[in-house]
Image (cartoon, rainbow, N blue to C red; front, side):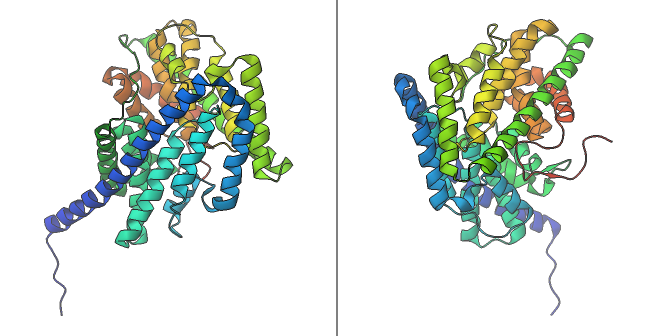
Length: 408
């Protein structure tokens, strides 16, 4: 019997309806999980700030988190890299245990004062929940790939409030030099809906005070190239030294909980003895200050060292918000040298260091426009692309593949 070929419009309509349903389901799960996570993270941060003595227990906290992963989380230890690997080469469903492990590990890390972020947690929860959703619907490997990408976008959007950047991030982060346009609809739908779900739950995202953007001039554009090169080298250094410390510790200390305990002891001693509280946690107040006033020119370095020490020894959280901090404070330090406003360089550094470290210049440019306004787009684009070119190929995500080299 001859197969009936359905009209193209019917096929497209059915495909759109299918991905609206699947992506919206992922978005509701990821957006709700991120809303709870952000609420709990605010509690953990406020509690630590009210009880500074909790820092003294950071070594024990690191031991407990690493021990839990050793006992129950070895299959999800790779975190974001596990999700990227599963998208490239689907093998088995991402275990649901990733959600409570990364959520609990991140909250403990923040409660006791590690210098970590939040993006990794939201993305991992979004990806793990997306894979469980794919399992419910018994999707093919091809469709499962797309839904995992949608989960990454949903997690990113719900934690930062930047749905356009999140949609492109889910497409761009997998491979250098290639975008997966077949996942465009799932990622856009998941990012937009997840962001709205978070707002519905009462999530409030930080507003950064970039009040004005100067007119475009030849010097302004050249300054973005110069600053972008510095931002790219900084992002490369962050990624390289975080991986190097992790490799070094694994070679020298075989027992993972002991690695985290040693890292926690170093971080806690540095903070308590050196009064370095401004460099732990998310550091949102310092990021906001970078837009408004001159800061100590070494703030970016202090945050970078403590974050590398925290992540490289096994604490959970993420790299992105620390990279925002590093970029904003480094931009603040460069502003007088380049004769440009603090706010502009803080905004551009905020996204450009991340662009270089993660190899996602398009998503980073869109993030700048969503957070700071469309007027900053030209400056951000030049700085992000330059940072991307100067940062080299290895980034914070080891599983990221190279489809095309950055340079001829």
